[in-house]
Amino acid sequence: MSDIAMRPGAAPAMGARRTAGSLGDKLFEALCKGAGVLVLLTLGGIIVTLFIGALPAFRHFGLGFLVSTNWDPVEGREEFGAFISIFGTIVSSLLAIAFAVPVAFGIAYFLTELAPPWMRRPIGTAVELLAAIPSIIYGMWGLFVLVPFVQMNIQLAFGETLAAIPLVGFLFESRSFAGTSLFSAALVLAIMILPFIAATMRDVFEQVPPVYKESAYGLGATRWEVMRGVVIPYTRVSVVGGIMLGLGRALGETMAVTFVIGNANRMPQSIFDPSTTIASVIAMEFPESLAGSLQQSALFAIGFLLFIISFVVLATSRWLLRSRLKA
Amino acid sequence: MSASTLSHAPARDPAAARALGRRRSYMDRIITAFCLAATAIGLFFLASILATLLWRGLGALDWTVLSTDFRPTTYGDDTLPKGGLLHAIIGSLIQVSLATLVGTPIGLLVGTYLAEYARGSALGNAVRFVSDILLSAPSILIGLFIYQLVVLPMGGFSGIAGVFALAIIVIPVVVRTTEDMLQLIPNTLREAVIGLGAPKWKMIVLVCYKAALSGIVTGVLLAIARIAGETAPLLLTSFGNNVVSTDLGRAMASLPMSIYQQANSGFPDLIAIAWAGALLVTLGVLVINVIARVVLRKRT
Image (cartoon, rainbow over all chains, first blue to last red; front, side, top):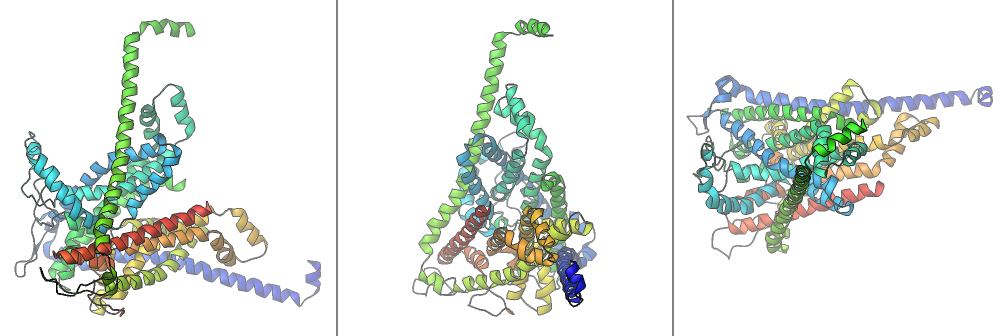
């Protein structure tokens, strides 16, 4: 140290290098921070552009846009209302959750408690690969494999029996036998969101301290009693968060649903009726709509609504999963 | 205390106790059977999708599909030349690689900001939250955004618009893995580098990135796998094209868009080509995913 201090020539060089370092630091930090701000601007930009695109439709139809069941793009009598597509989006996603949650729970329980260790990784990977398959592939598989199956083995085989159930039978009535329906869409969505829900459940089940489970086993509890009495109460909030994550994914799913839902702008009366969702209306009609037309603005408007709905669901999911994020 | 416990024990009916024990173990077995069934269902769907793809895709996949672009078709006319997916394969390669090149550096910098600079700060939390939302946000809305931002001002669908839409999808995937991987690096390593007198940016670029390299590569691979199959945003941005085109200023074909258009055409020979394309995309995506897993596993 004293050696350097005694030679004045060395000191400025050291100082200069340190300044260069701190300049590089400032630049790099600004670069990183700028990229972060860019991400914020992107989301802000999405909200703003959707809203700007939607303004003419909101102005033209007012609040009635939300509740109107008319959707008629034919020139000269354009009339647009969002209710049918909002209804289809929410019902297909909730049905998908109803199908997917029990299966996802079964898979997560199997992977954490029941499966021998050598089976866990391959089966876990296989289920995760379901999440990697692109939406369009689910759509094709749904249209050419699942839809005919639903048509022949569910609608034709059980349709009448289901429709004869007192009180709720009307929900299962088959008026259209095309097989493309709310039910088919929910089934495809359920398979697509299955890996997300199962993976979240598995991760949080694994975070339960072994001591808790061992104490319950020590008291003579069965595996299921440990699950129901210890694991589920311990992880309840995160499990709901995982389900909300699946719901958020299902709400915005486009291509797979477009293939199998039938794309009918009518109110569905039963789960076997064709229907539509916000994302599939946009996919079907947007490429053919004219720039600046009322139709295009109405499509931006339902896109804006979809953004609000999925933002709320995804934000809730993230909030519920916050303890898992910290861990 | 023990005496009173003992005195209660005989009061319980042994037959009822046995019945309760049987019920509990039956319940356990029923749930176990249900979980096995659930796992079998999940695996069955994966197998069904892969089998359908192989069955119908391999039957249609030949050199013509890989080496020609779109050819029109009519019912029952076998004399027409067969078409293929060359235009779509080239379009997809261009858009996916450019989107990765645009999105990766931004995602890397954001991930670095979150892990190295913003721990606990309000801006950092906001960026992390927004990035997580973007990760799961409906991709068709990103298409609408780029439509307003790029397609309308340019006056038409274009390959560059598709690149931007896909890049926005790349960013949050890279952010997530980069941040996670940087946070796994022990602080002692950082302290050692700083202690040697290196500025912070050198510590990050030369040491932390190197230590987290396999994780970052995994993130980029997962992002590529994700955008390679994206259709919805391209429907509103690069739209599709029937001939080989490398002009980023005009509509550009992509595999997912060609699959979508040909699968819905109603012509059996076009649907067969769509299956060949579906097989290509899925194989590509799954292979990249498996490679990403292997890269990551080597590290841990």
